[in-house]
Length: 52
Image (cartoon, rainbow, N blue to C red; front, side, top):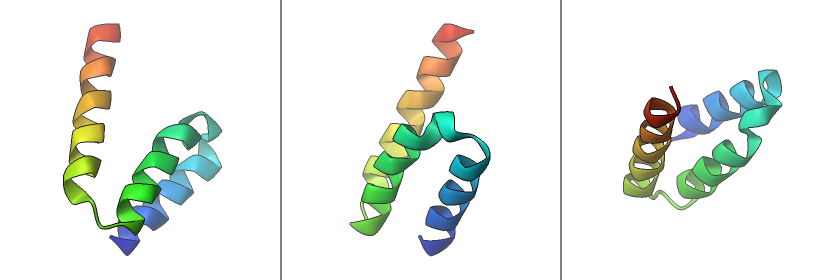
């Protein structure tokens, strides 16, 4: 989980437009809510497919 949090922070530093998304993930990481992380990522991937 620590590696995930570090990766999220690195991505936000390079791409600030992802800040809100990764703030949600960081909160889930902090609370060890792995299912919510997976749900959020799946939801975002679904949104990208429908936007393309």
